[in-house]
Amino acid sequence: MGEKVLLLLLLVSWSLMVVDGKKNQGREEVKLISDQSNGRPPMFILNKFKKVVKSEGGEVKVVSGYKWKGDINPMHIGFITMEPNTLFIPQYLDANLILFVQTGEVKVGWIHKDEYLVEERMKMGDVNVIPAGSAFYFVNVGNDDEKLSIICSIDASGTSEWNSYQSFFIGGGRNPTSVIAGFGVMTLRAAFNVTMDELSFLMKQKNGPIIYMTNTTEEQHLLPSMIKLKLKLQQQLSDNGKEMHEDDDQYKESYKTWSWRKLLSSLIGKKKRKGGRVHSPESFNLYDTEPGFCNDYGTSVSIDKHQYSPLKISGIGVYYVNLTAGSMMAPHFNPTATEYGVVLKGSGIIQVVFPNGTNAMTARVRAGDVFWVPRYFSFCQIASMDGSFEFFGFTTSARENRPQFLVGESSVLKSMMGPELAAAFGVAEEWLERVVEAQSQSVILPPLHVEGKN
Ligand SMILES: *[C@@H]1O[C@H](CO)[C@@H](O)[C@H](O)[C@H]1NC(C)=O
Ligand SMILES: *[C@@H]1O[C@H](CO)[C@@H](O)[C@H](O)[C@H]1NC(C)=O
Ligand SMILES: *[C@@H]1O[C@H](CO)[C@@H](O)[C@H](O)[C@H]1NC(C)=O
Ligand SMILES: CC(=O)N[C@H]1CO[C@H](CO)[C@@H](O)[C@@H]1O
Image 1 (cartoon, helix red, strand yellow):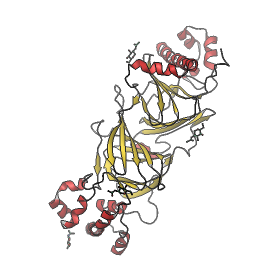
Image 2 (cartoon, rainbow, N blue to C red; image 1 turned 180 degrees about the vertical axis):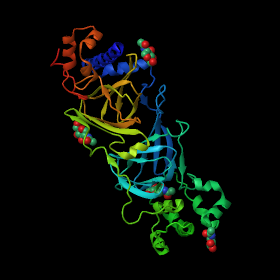
Image 3 (tube, rainbow, N blue to C red; image 1 turned 90 degrees about the vertical axis):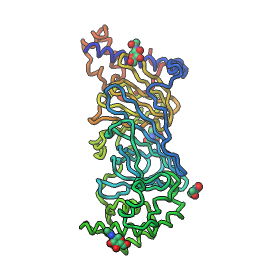
Image 4 (cartoon, rainbow, N blue to C red; image 1 turned 180 degrees about the horizontal axis):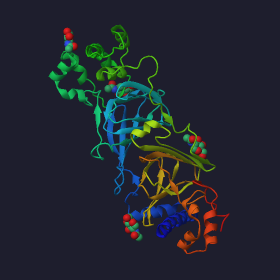
């Protein structure tokens, strides 16, 4: 036990030394430390972005985490960018998605509880969850010149192989190919009870998974067969004794304006939401929420299934931190979670320490960078002096994650202060007490003022 505490303390003293060094020697020091890795990228920065979707209307890039020892499965983090007036065509994944809108505004439609199609507009800072196997689509509904950026966690821990996740397109044609197309013409003719000609809708789309909503000529061409399909599907539903929600006239009317929403519900044969709202989970906004922690040096918010129940399907938490220039998230570790972070704004330094008390990484990060910290590893984030540093991310934890702080007013050291701790360091208790109490702030600590001290 004493050894453990000592270990923690070494981590802490080390971190402080580096911050000190940084202050005295400027940015050179930081560079020097990162360069010790012989040109290899810093260990806890994820920078192998893979472009998984490239389309006329946007793209999707994904970075993947690593598996650290026996830790829970790593996640993938996706960056979705969509041009104005585009649609990410209906699909489902074998992984849970947690969406965070970085910029712009999106209309998300998805099948809720395997039953209803619900649509929700999400704005900047909103978080929402789409469970594995739930068909969904995105429409960029922002201003005409507004790109949409969504950051999402792709949590494939429910699949047999952690490192693979798969999209199954429902909409599509030649590119991407709809899973419906795979059944072959004869099966489909029988299944849909339509002619060959009417099946041609499965061969049209060729512009990739993210398409412009404005190129409607081909879509309008599909309209008549879509109406027929829906009517037939509806007939089958009612034949099976299922409820019918709309009469034919209403349908024909609604199909005068072609929409993927209708296509989706017709293809999956789902009930359409009637008039009022179906009870569906609202998005959770990370920016409009009362911060869990707040002082003069920054704010932090973290939500898990207790604050936002849709998160319970994945056991993943979401957090957001905003540090003022030069401030620091005090050295801490996560006892139950591996943490992933994406820098949203500004720049700063991430320090991670190995269990044996040596520095694992001191890396400068800026907007767009992704870092990760394995469970139990001690780390801290420090904002650069030139502005606030905002980052956001995911924690993979089935249980509530309570970060343990090593330094500051609410720290492990403070709680353990006593003769044992002093003995562990081999110093007088009063001496140690003075050191441990010198920091009056907790969690988010102010910049170091060299002149005032020493
Ligand atoms: C198939 O469609 C034909 C007309 O196109 C209709 O008479 C028949 O009842 C339909 N069969 C089923 C099972 O819906
Ligand atoms: C982050 O903090 C800065 C001040 O340090 C503030 O100007 C900015 O609006 C904050 N960002 C958000 C998204 O609240
Ligand atoms: C500490 O642990 C890391 C990672 O396991 C290892 O690479 C490094 O050599 C170790 N350092 C010492 C001084 O034991
Ligand atoms: C295939 C095609 O016609 N794509 C066009 C769709 O519309 C956008 C602008 O609205 C064009 O940039 C694409 O070339």
